[in-house]
Image 1 (cartoon, rainbow, N blue to C red):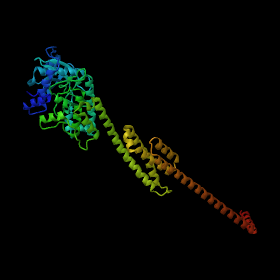
Image 2: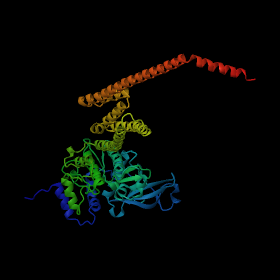
Image 3: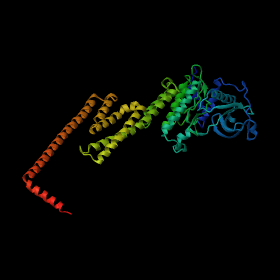
Image 4: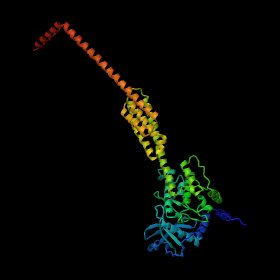
Length: 512
């Protein structure tokens, strides 16, 4: 009795009978043709396409039509040309079936791509301007021409000139672009369209940093249950989801989520999720999709997201592209918060050093240097507190874990108490106790510190007051003794004083 082969087995059998030099593209050329025999495509003969005139000369196209200039891209079955539309004075892109791939299946595939793209009106999807046929009856798809660079070129070239425009670090920029791709897929899924071929080569970065998801040639329409069943593989083996190569369960939105995970994997480690020297190796890797042990320099949150998104079980993946995007955004927020936390902790360390320098100055010694240190401490304390408040707003769990703001407030409170600004010290302690929930023991110790400072201050003040009083009494007593001595002198020699005064009066009267 003949053994029945699984769909995956039949796919490998097909591969064994083929001799491809390029496992990525050639395999797709064959299988995508087979795939389109299993979908309800709009046949060219069922609905005649309008004639679109193509000219070699711009003057000939002035009355209507397009002047094709040069090829700007090529895929498995199609080729894309740059063209000029004189009537509207604009540049467009025209996609045609490659002559050597011309067939009814290829024609139907291009028409289906046009109809699916017509469903999708999104700023990150190049719009369709027209669908028609050339003079030979071959379909033409007229689209917006996107100028820029492919994401794969930028990602694979660290010295690419594009990086000169980017102020963020490379990973942050990549993740922001990926969130835009997630938005596109979330929208496409809401319109019941599955892309099936998300990869770096199919993302174009526009001249102003905008991103476009291209090549919807493998896209299919989902049924009312959000699923698509097929027995034939279509896509890129190096990135494919298990259900794409095994053909044992319907494809759904989580299939594109898997491709997002594959794309993220390539961004993180620089190679495809199912990288292999052979096409068979790629497909086996995709079929089993074992979890990856990522290097230590890959952020744990992203490594975890990659493994969940590329889980063999579709139910274990993020259910939608929107949920995948939310996890990326969460990581980016924490990444920003992490940078802020690092800056805040550096300020906190500087604040500690300043306080140590101030404390090292002998008590009661008020010098210009100490006054300068106090000014610096006050300004730095404000900056440090603001920095930790930013961290708390961006990612509360980060600030709570570090306790940095509480440490900053504690240093400010201690210095306020040392500066005899007890009202500020008590206010800071209240904030520490009520808002930052410090331990009762620490709160009691800090309160004792302030009270001890207040008691010492009051005792010193009373001591100084007593010393001043004693000094004043001593001076008064000394003054009284001086006055008594003078009075005694005057009493003992009245005649001598009288004679001196008389002599002085006579001298004055003798002056003419």
